[in-house]
Amino acid sequence: MKKLSSLRNMIRRFREDQRGNVLMLFGLSLVPLIGVVGVAVDYSRASNARQALNAAIDSAALMAARDAQKLTDAQLTARINAWLKANLPPEVQSEFTAAAVTIDRTARTVKIVANANVPTTVARVLGSETLPVSSTSQSTWGTNKIELALVLDNTGSMAQKNKMTALKAAAKDLIKIMQDATTETDQIRISIVPFNTQVRIARTFQNEQWMRYGESRRVICNSRGTSCTLDDYYRTPISDLDGLVCSGSGNNKSCTKQNITKTTWAKTSEGCITDRDQNYDVKDGGSYTASEQQFPAFWCSQSTLAEALPLTSNWTTLNGKVDSMTPVGATNVTIGAVWGWATLTPGAPYTEAKPATEPRLKKYMILLTDGDNTQNRWDGNGSDPSPAIDARTKLACTNIKADGISLYTIRVMDGNASMLRDCASKPEMYYEVTDASQLSPIFKAIAGEISAVRLTQ
Image (tube, helix red, strand yellow):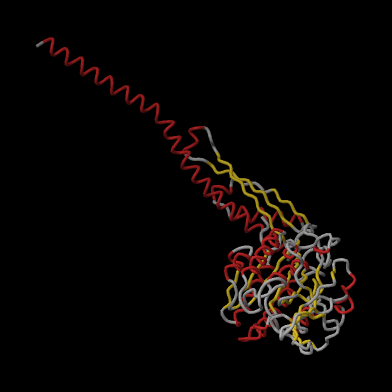
């Protein structure tokens, strides 16, 4: 019994010794464990502080853009730092000294780089007394230099349901907003490109190297060759039979109209351009030494199509061009988009645009249509939707966006919604119009977005 009692005492002492070791080991591990937990807590606090710093620096950048023209560099820097400190969490304010502020009055930008330290709490046991956070923001003050192309459907269907009247009012609203936003000469310039199956340009371009003449037009004549019509959707009557060469017999003789010449194209009733040879029909510019890169002069299918207006800040001229628009003809969105693009690039055929490297310059296009693509130089009958023309429009839109142009699209009641949605630079830059009265609010919203002071990065 005595031996048994001793054994029990030994086991008891061993057990007591084990508990002491566990407590000792636990005590030794408690310090790093608390540190790990503390780091997690403090990193969460630092993340919140970073978010607060991001919000503070963005609002400071916008405030700086608003006040830059009224304050000196020193005054603006002092206001930015005061703004930042006032909008930081209390525990970070004491650790914040000043932001690095870079003011470029040529490019009209304010860049702010802010650093702050978040005091740690429990993590101090690991030797970290603060955690650094940082943020960067930049703003542009005043209105950016803007080049905006209005590419507007002028087809016959725009005469229906008050669409053309509403479009003219909306376009003038946009022009007025852009005029009011202008603070310096030529800061905002707008071009207007009315289109149907063609685009009409100034006949003063007749001698340019990028023009091409000699296109022929097929006509349909009766068996005697005395009554003929143009072989297009509108079957336009031909009264002048000079130059007709007919072949075949019966009531559908096939005839070719005399090729268009420079003199013919430059007369008052002409000045129209048809699609360039593929694949130049969806591109801008070129060397123009090869005929396939040149722009084919063509007879105007509808003589009342308004002439395209290159970039200008003459507000009276812009409003007058809007007033001159007349709905007539079928739809070829591709040619409208490509000529709108041409007004936004500095090379021929239009040379008014500034290079994309111009400081603060932003380029935009608003492309509006109320119907499906129905006719271009190669495809379509002027009535039914043409998938082949849709494919050309999609390629043109892709190339326009790749050239750095922000593209808005507006579908007015009818048209290929999927194509126009994909054409827009962003989903929110596509607008669906179900009633003509919606055009003015949409144009005002786009004008406000384009002309607003915005963060640049």
